[in-house]
Length: 153
Length: 403
Image 1 (cartoon, rainbow over the protein chains, first blue to last red):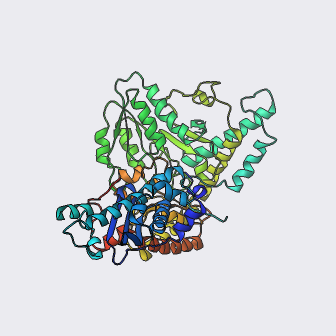
Image 2: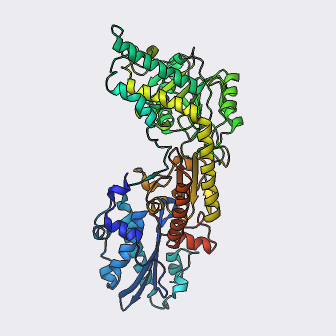
Image 3: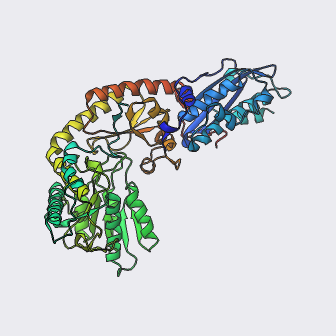
């Protein structure tokens, strides 16, 4: 396939000048999705205050489309209520980028999955009896993020 | 756009000398070499026979008559395998011995022959891509009708010990076919010295035209044709000959032989400059394939924690290719890298450099600069790089939310 012909200017812009790269300092939600064997991994960290996503940052191992969708999703969620943010779909991210080549559409699923995982992770941290996790604890790669939450329940 | 072309394993540009040689046959000299009633046919026939001689000289064949012109190397590979299987059709349960990193023209042909009852045996290769000769010998038995092994690989550039395999083939009285497409014009190829019975040739991989190639068929080797028609090419490949293409192929072969030593030593220097530069400037860049037994124009590096397609986008201005799934329609990473045991994430991070005539030191320097800065930039946004810095082994890590 010819990525050069098919990436929109917006995709190239978000690939070349990605927004919000990094890890949110005092994050209270994290989502890690994908698998290096499949060629893409995305880590999304968010800071939620009063149900509003006040900050979002990403780190992504993936192709140009994966990086661009990661960048776009961080832009889209900032300032949104978590319930509204959950309504963001891969299709919405794609549309915001002016579309993706057919074979790259699965990349946008990564962004949607990471967003859902991060919000789910934030919500679980709010369960009764659980103190809010610090960013340092959340930034723990050694264990499965979900599992750490489950065992604590 | 001034694209710097470094994808010479995929195809090569037409040499201007080749175009000059072809031009009359695309215009005024349009005769059919099969026409024997007038001089137009005669001139075309002379041109075709000259090309046959140029090819025979390039590969060290004993006679030009041993060259059969085809539409390219895929057809040559098909003709070699299918033609031999059909010639041996009285043999029960025949087998072919090959390796898993052959070009798809061999692997898919073998798969198709499997359905006709031919057993395909894969000899082991090591992690550099080199065939295990002991295992190769073990795979050959009385029912083996053909060995097919590439001279050099198009992705990792590994050069197989064809000479030793030729000896093994002789000892076991088995025919040897080699796809030499990537090797011609880059390393010395000689069918007599190496006991090769069949050899596939492509025009466009050695600065000749596309749509033309050939199969060397040693005298005395019988094969059943795939295309029936007017009995052209000693009955082995019917169809009016592609005269301009054949003339171009011959000229390309002549130039390949003439320039072999000078060009391969020049490419070796450029390749080593690139390899050293990568090793010096980029940490955790791993060479795929054999460190020394490789084509003078090939390098294949995995830039850990960076995805190949993203890196290609960053190296805008250079024509390169990647082992990553992200540029293939099948979304599968390179089967060659997989076969030599490269972990999936490194296969996705691999870039192939295929150097050629138009490349020079300035371009290598420019490429090194782009690679260095792009790998650095992409690693800064790679979660895998963070993990690696923390000492986490990516291969054993249990990934949540895999999809």
